[in-house]
Length: 110
Length: 118
Image (cartoon, rainbow over all chains, first blue to last red; front, side):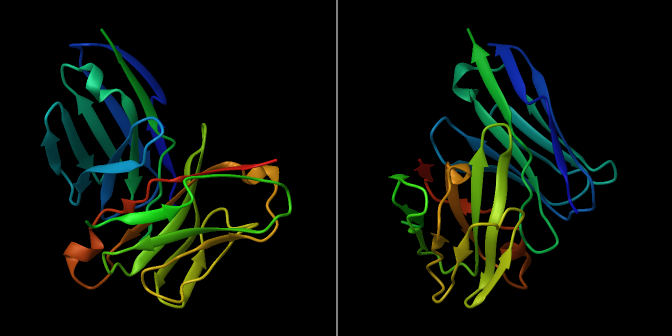
């Protein structure tokens, strides 16, 4: 059974700082997704990572995947208030479903 | 516009009164799924469907039913709701097929249904 652990679950950052969110998963998966959720809103797909060593970047966010370590990271560079949201990682399960982590609630303060 | 539509957005009901939350997608996706989101627990899968007339239990199916009579619709049924089913519910869909583009496609989520059972 695929289990997913995200760290940290809560993250309070100052604007301009860098930080990394970690996503560990327990069994092999051939793809991993990162989603963003704003308060009271739906989930929005950010990145799809498909192979070992994959790296994707969009603005101040960069996601990477190490399938051997079963680890994905979401790195935030020079955080701004607009990045405040909850971020979920979700490796793909064997039935085509996604198994979500508990989410990391990010708060960026001036 | 490609979208997953859930209704209603908000629902307050009483224990034991049967209800249905509808979900419809206009993207011709084979795969559809229901999740519930609770504070501190993330998203947990309730049921999913690989295609028409095919449904399977997710991690937390107790107290829920689904049906998939048509490709576009995947309603969630609570026959006898209880207060522990108070939650935020999301329907999602994605293509499913032999092509890698389908296999790797992310889930598209609806806007959510906030259900309160008193």
